[in-house]
Length: 207
Image (tube, rainbow, N blue to C red; front, side, top):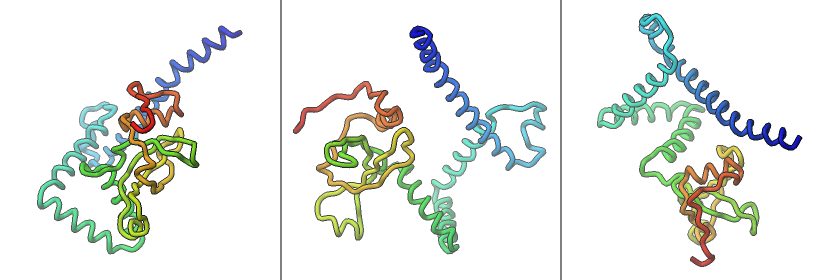
């Protein structure tokens, strides 16, 4: 029975990751294929070629992102984006949602941003209990005026779902900067500590 149990769990460890990966990829491809609906019926690849091309929506989505990105990178594109932002900011309710989403996306995707650029070790939720978190920036404005010491904005993700978590302000001196990459830190969190970063090196206190 012990051998059968071992074989069963070994089989699960081999099959489950592959099945879940295939399912996620299939969901992404099928979802992006829905972007083909924006094309006129006569232009649909299925109708033009006479057969379905799985994943064509992925290529179309990438093409749209590249075209929009190229257009928004020049002077005229930046002006139009600015006018669009100004127009949306005048619409009640919509402006609140749009401005919040835009601030988050600008922080996450901006090349000059500091979000999720550094993994740190912090004591959370109490002293003596440690977890891995991410520095997302520094407090400013009225918040910074009340904080006399040097503080940083820290995102403490939950496990195994790092998309939810806690935003806290912590003294920089209380955050131990780690050498591990953001990808390695996320993998460490998602796996609940099972998959430790291979390049993880312990540092002696005070060094």
